[in-house]
Image (cartoon, rainbow, N blue to C red; front, side):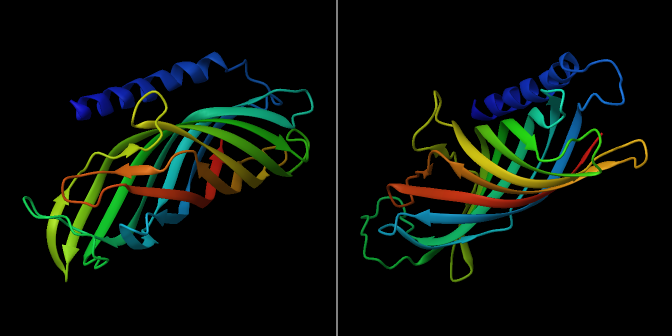
Length: 246
């Protein structure tokens, strides 16, 4: 049932986005300021975890990619609004307990098992961006942006091992500790500093580099019959995104 919900959510997002983009599209003009942005890049995660039930959180390889529609809001071509869809893959390793069925759960601070957890998310970013130099007559424009992210948790991947021997390999259901309407739905805020090359008549092609810091409003909740109770994971993320606008 949960997999069906995930597929339905993906279907609605990706097939409704072209219609939304078209509704904001104006007639061609050299100075519309509008366009579609595609971005991708690595992410660094900073994780904290309940120290009574787990230790040594360490980030795994993480990345983000997505696309958005950009619309200018003023005649000075400095203020923009963006909306789109992002995919976020991130994870962490940590040490914790593993309880077999019908065994007494003793929290003796042994932390004998290695957990390797990957999380997959989709988000709808709603961003306001301000350029310090006009886009229509400046070759380069530094900018600052603030973004609200509506986040949805997809499937996760987990391996639990002891001394190199895997004792559990599955796709557990993660949720947010403090959900927004639904246990897999929550939000985040981010701030970005960026630099973009603009597409002018004398210099075609537009690309950008963006440093982004994101803070989520709720920890992740990982609960199972074999793991420690109250295993909540807090995180913030720093990413370097590269992209193109066309």
